[in-house]
Image (cartoon, rainbow, N blue to C red; front, side, top):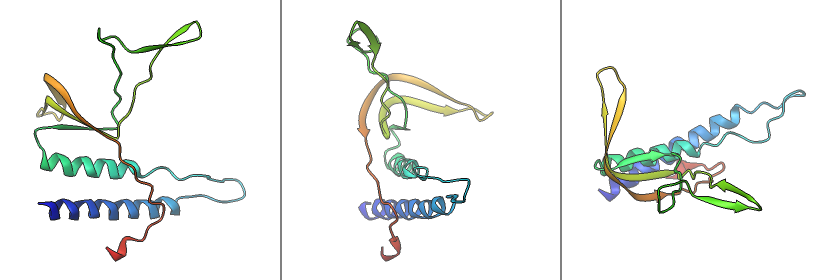
Length: 139
């Protein structure tokens, strides 16, 4: 089981590396167009890890880059003071949010619906991946 998960993670890293290489090919550097940064490919890794985890733990729902509003004890959006002004705390976006108690079903038309059965956050996963250009051929 551990070996299979390891192989899937390595496969995800290889896919991420291929995307990184392709991403750098798309950079345009001419007299008129300069691109300073590539688009992030970390979302590919996040989705791959969520997919692997969902296969191993089908009882949970895995939400990738999903906004979470922070609530106070009365279920109101959490606020803070900025001088005389009261502002809402901005939502957070964990890389992967693991939730139990939510059933997701797909209709015949392809639409998804969910049923909340006393849902509970199990984990917030914040993945750190900044490989830059890494040659994974040695793996």
